[in-house]
Length: 384
Image (tube, rainbow, N blue to C red):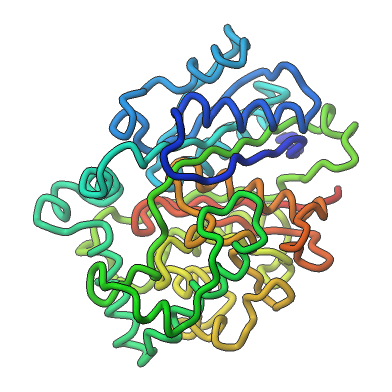
């Protein structure tokens, strides 16, 4: 019998460029989350990071965080699942507590990316794809997403200016986000005039390289029941798909996202339309409609309509990127899933300020590793 698990503490450091160190990033978010939970000790620590060793030279993040928090000899480890590393770490901690192994855990997602050149960062990020069959043959990670975007625009007769509205929405929400990197509004015309990165992908179709850390404290039922502000984990789904595009039956279908969503929603005994807030992995504008379609919110080939119809606004039917999303909040890869979970927690606690979704009671958080090779989905609820 699995135990109920809840979030009892949450914190996120401001996303930035040129952070002092990965140590300081992780420590700041971790200390703030523990303070939010009113705890000085946890039974375990799980750190999510995609490529800390390549970006900073620092591997072995679990004991580093435990040491800096003066929590040794607590069990501590790092989890890697490319850009889904944060949510994967959360998933591991959730399973460990639900199983009865631990009663509490600190989960921290962290990445410091800006200490290397853009060229080096691009090479590191390409490791989220199939390195032997794709990257060594000349494909970059941006290039792979450009292939998907070109196919989507062509197959469904969609204009680029319609997809770019997802970026406009993200930037609009980032203006009042306390931890967003890109706090500047943008129009469709401005976004469409930005430089081409990998045709047809333009600068405003992409999330930025940046540094950040976000943390959550999870606790078992018997601990969390003393917290009026606890946010409960009602469903958890984790699924994988092929690494390389040439093995997929359909380039425009995110099977792992669909399967992970079905698993999480079944556990939560909810339908996708029952959700009030959706934090999804909008690293590239083309991924947004694909994700919305994979969740069952729109028919295949029609997810782009969500931006055109205004349904993704804070008061819309499908509010997304409520604090700026990956596009404008920033995408410090290993930390991104944790930022999404922290933001969803703030929404469900009613602590989102100007970014608050009205009457938010439930949230779905979807985090992606690679071009859909790993998908983690969690369903959160504000009350029991």
